[in-house]
Length: 317
Image (cartoon, rainbow, N blue to C red):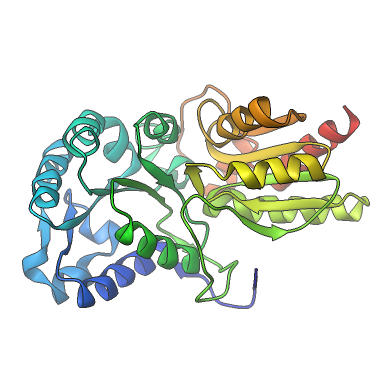
């Protein structure tokens, strides 16, 4: 797939904003909406380049989605962003009815998902958004893991006819993929092949941890495959089944509740198509709290060591 660890980290939000500017330069229908968080989303560069196509609605996320629906109904391609807790929990009904039920083309973005909220703490630490969004009929739900995947998947979202939900880590991330790597919504990426156990991860926090876990397992003679399942809905059933036939079991890795997120999506495929042992690394029925990213990884056991430990349980079972 063309992985690299040589490039310097880059802010995911900057890549998001730069990609929107690039898309808007060739497509006059691309517009953005912000709920008083343009600085947090780095979309000031879009506003500067296209001031008549950038709308700051203030702290009124539900209204933002209503406006986005109107823009979509008039033929525009609106990207509407706020912190994950506000995009999902606060504005869920408006996104569900005004955008999805109405068959429109709104691209909703939730930033700082899960423990990425860090010092904003428990009120902003949204562990539930994937569960909410997986229940919206026809909605495409995805989460890039690094700067190149942000650029590619935002482009795919803009081209997709229908609503999408992007879970976006804002802060600097070291690239896993090379620039120009191809991505397709609904198709996972095999970062590392393996024959013993499959580690399926999503997002900028957990995909690197899964790669590190594979290294820990390799030292013990365990061959672990690593899959970046960037699209949670629709999940790549074909890829899951292929590795179910190839390996002895799975560990899913997500910065989200283990209920109705990536782990649930993989479990559904396995139960229906090719049963295999499965362990889920993620948040277990808890609220968030204040802390650094490293502290929160340890606090909620979202670490390479935990993933490797769960993989050994799968293999021993």
